[in-house]
Image (cartoon, rainbow, N blue to C red; front, side):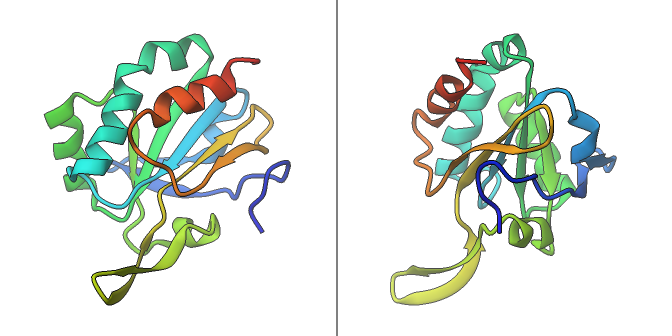
Length: 153
């Protein structure tokens, strides 16, 4: 069970360049790990651009921002380039990491049922433990909400 105070599930996924990235590589730093449904869609773009616009504040807090979605690495590369995103996006096409974090959920839209990402952000402390979970995130203003949670740091 993923909950605050417990160790964050370890993972290794590919970034937009195809390089394998492991969560443990960021031990000693704060990690803002956000799960989002799809590159270059309105809500996901709003959320990503919020993290982009606040990037220097995250750097000042010694925090790294990492986004994860089921999109492939090529889609991430286009999304990063189009919006000049200065942080890591990781591909989870088989949604194994999303499942490990409990964010791969059954969803309902216009009478249709399907599986997808429930927009969620995890703040992971420098020791690798989950310090804060933001569930069912609203993209607008979310980055500022996360920064406020890092402020006492």
